[in-house]
Length: 257
Image (cartoon, rainbow, N blue to C red; front, side, top):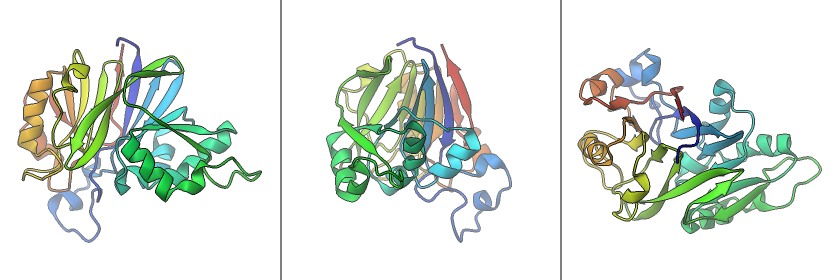
């Protein structure tokens, strides 16, 4: 999986983002941009193709800030609102393409999209006033535009979630455990973005302690912590990280291969 990959961390925050509305905690009051977190999402460029992981409610602002003005496909992890509810902003990309945009996800996620956003799954009108989306169910590695994309089954509480591997990069957000059958798909990965919600245990996410334990087990060269609540201040958390693990922040860029 040595294909060249460039990624931009569009958001590393949890469902509420940081700062949280109405909160006066030190992290929310911080003027350090590394403590300002939009909802979790990643832009990936490889072999002339551009992919987006998830469409959270901050999609428009993320795309404008980080120069994401073209998409070839969207890779979905699961249908919680902070990962899906910006789907309507895909219409700008469909308009630029003058064609449908492919969505990849598991059956659970695509069923939710069909139920909640059925209006976006029709042929285009002459006005391109709605997204024009083509959902494709996936459960094994496949290619899009010559790029190998590997869905990574994860467990997110009671929900079946997907992580994604592209080249030597893996995105593992919103998980409570990594199934034994998924671990071989992470063999040789060099860069991992890993769920890390807060210090206290939570039924459907990894705590700091659990995240660091999984980082050791996966053994990537670099592990970047993501999907963090405002309870985790950037510098305080970074001080707890062992070598090879770092705290994510919006706008981080990486190039592999």
